[in-house]
Image 1 (cartoon, rainbow, N blue to C red):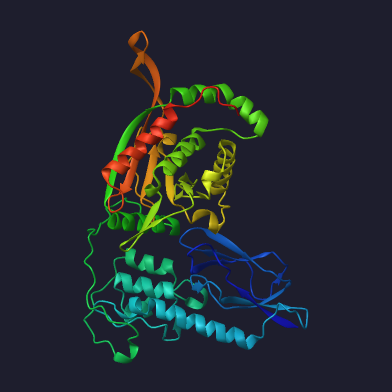
Image 2: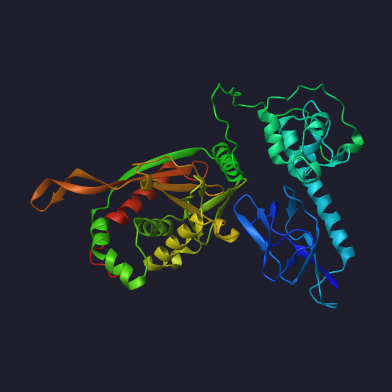
Length: 442
């Protein structure tokens, strides 16, 4: 027999850790190669981790709700081969786990040891283990060690889980505690003596109100949006584009397009193509800010906001979108949208975007003021296409005609993009759409 470390794999660009959400196998279960063993969640997407070997699960290292670092062992699988080149001795497993634990402790040390009005939350107390997530939440909510020790845990072996912390907070049992000195031996990072005051007032539910706990994705979206507004001074410019030619062309070719290519052509890839051309004309829209530096991206990676059945939002990314034809964009948009709805996106497919398009017209909205998807500096919202009377210039003079109109809303980070650039960019997108070739081949 030999033992194999199941390593938490790289989960995508810039993702360094993941939270264990569900073990799909129990200790003692047989596992086949490529069979999923555990579900994990990052701040971008949920994924399953498969086993690369056949064997039996003999040890779970990272429990549910634990935060594991990419590249560290989360379980041990016993294989039937004595000298399998892919196996690793158990001793290094223990060393890697210890190193991972030290690394995690260093990352959350300041958050754990700087609780206002309470002592630092320790890793274990009274025989109970507290995961990094639980300790960090306790710090954030001002829950003292003494309070944490008496919270009823619903996790494995009575451990306190995230749901237990949230239930405790919702019960209103948080008690003020006297300030106690923090022992110097417990300090691994500079101590922050005070926390920023809460800006949102407490909400007291009325009789009959329903309290719905945010799911993990909704909490991440909330944090991401608040961070974006705090980070970027948002400015939004609007242009009303005449999409009459686009609408006429699509109505003419959509049936043949689907018959020939097996894909439905929507307005999203058409608008995306105009955005890509405009980025090539104004490359300083395709940037990010790093401190006092502006990073001008070589690749044009366009994100597309997609609504999920749960009501949450995810932004899959089309990499190197400028290298795709309209057919290629159509295939990419349809594929990513379908897999987003089925929760089948890969971590790499929701990261690395340099510009984002959100189609609020899908919900009948005529315009919106979208929030920038950090670390990008701009995002465009496409509104609903509506028939409107408009003045049309003809050789015979001006006349009133029915036209298909759509508002484009362009939000941008005023630190990097001034009004002139932001306004010219959205105007250029409209110009490309208005100049659509009615005889364009499919």
